[in-house]
Length: 425
Ligand SMILES: NC(=O)c1ccc[n+]([C@@H]2O[C@H](COP(=O)([O-])OP(=O)(O)OC[C@H]3O[C@@H](n4cnc5c(N)ncnc54)[C@H](OP(=O)(O)O)[C@@H]3O)[C@@H](O)[C@H]2O)c1
Image 1: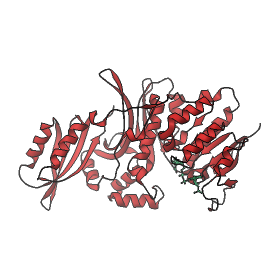
Image 2: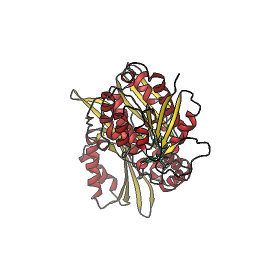
Image 3: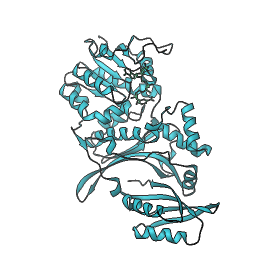
Image 4: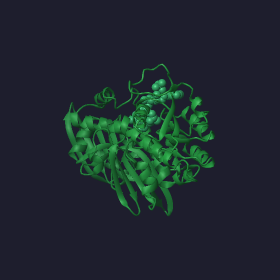
């Protein structure tokens, strides 16, 4: 049987892993790899022909599929569009380009009867995409919730375990190669927002524009918050969730990424280090959990090479691309404004330790129709104290309004944190 001929764009962390795994595959010939810097030293065991001209791959009639592991939005979008126009199938690990241009890329692939495989774009080594596309086909997916970013989970786990600050945990993650020199995509939640856009396309049939996804990062989480959360029976994790619900008979989507207090006994609270966990809720299967490495060279390459093998096995069958293509509609889904969503909240205020403060806080919360489940004062120091409030279910907009009022009060030194509390749906 003739070998399937592939080209690859990118030979960094993931690309190197792909070359290593493909070396064992008899059915696939990796003809050429495009890189940015042709003079860069590569690992000793990496033998492949390299070029710094991506169009050498795209214009090569022998190459049947392009593996894209270069990352970011542009010029990846330009290259993937050009590859599809030249009738090449695509395997990509690039969540950003899919989240920002998914509707156009899938429409073009459909028009050209080509396949786009993207298992590595969400949750690295965990076979989440193929499970949602094929294994759960008989279900209506109601929600996908998870810890989808290993870097932030590593940072929060280190802060909790070693009682260190966010800055120290980030420096440790960078030294160990778990975080980029510019960590903003991870710690500000952009990476999870891209993944949620892709998961929304699989679960609900449309991509969600990443900038319409409600997003909070983890930079504001302090050691004090972790300690207080612990004393109330919670851990703090960065959670991404995409779920459907009905409001007055109208279908709505709630898609967001935010640090949340998770009850310690819940599975989401028990995933530490750089692992990912995903809970998929389908109407027939009910709840399914998948845990594993969400990144890393070989776990990610495992997902990519799995896609390449699947593609190579089916490549010459009639209509195979239609079989593999997800049913994704053109256009974007809109999401419900976060302010309208009701949940429970944790609020930490640093106040001047003067009589009557708790009563004044209670009055402001009551005026905004916020029921208090618990309010406690902790750790008086330098005439300041932490007041911790756990609310009942309340709209986010009401909590924001109360927070703005509290900020105008002279007894308040700082509104140190406002975080949502996780509830099983
Ligand atoms: N790292 C992970 O654990 C992981 C996990 C899941 C998904 N992903 C996704 O996998 C993709 C690759 O990640 P990575 O960590 O391997 O990135 P990386 O180490 O930064 O490697 C990027 C590679 O792309 C090449 N490149 C960049 N711009 C290029 C351009 N304009 N033309 C040609 N080549 C270009 C670079 O060339 P040079 O080598 O010459 O600089 C490099 O080889 C990203 O989409 C990422 O989100 C990564």
